[in-house]
Length: 286
Image (cartoon, rainbow, N blue to C red; front, side, top):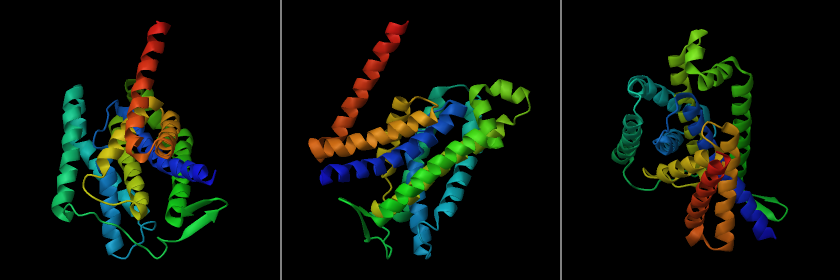
């Protein structure tokens, strides 16, 4: 039973990161109707920014606002100078190649600056273990889990009740109508893409205390975020949150029952089954 509970907690933790990545991806898709294929690489950028700040003596958790601000700025600049001109072409292929190319650019810049060596961040509290009944969890993981919950709740409150959040939802529903009533759609695009990148950067910051940092680390999270978006529903923040938790639980439980070797295989098979079943249901409804 204790092993099961331990796997459950670990699944919720990694699922929280998948949820945050998926929500960032869905924020961008919901407004601009594009899939950001370099989303995982922005997580990698957040991890390296955290590493740089740690070398300057700034604790990873204290660096969280700085990382969020930096990744938001990078996303806003990319949106304004690269993605906005491509949106005018109404070509999915152009945006696909652009975001994939940006991901390769981020990877190679990190490779040139930091080399391919795995980096880690060690703090005085990295090895502290908290015992919650039969479950043991490292303090950084517990703090990261709490931070993920706070950020997720904050994102829901922001989108639901703030003026900017209401404008984002208006643009996602009808960009032409939003522009007619005076909402600055282009500025919303910039803010939204920056917000999605900031969420990925925050996830990267929170990962650094118990995950290795290298230029290719974002690839697996990018693909998992795409699975979360597809399963949870394009543009659905709530769906991404639930799908991310379910994905994390599926990974840890399959590792426990079948073995870690088949963890990714289980996820991919389940993903294919969900797509097939969903398509069958949609065809029957017609």
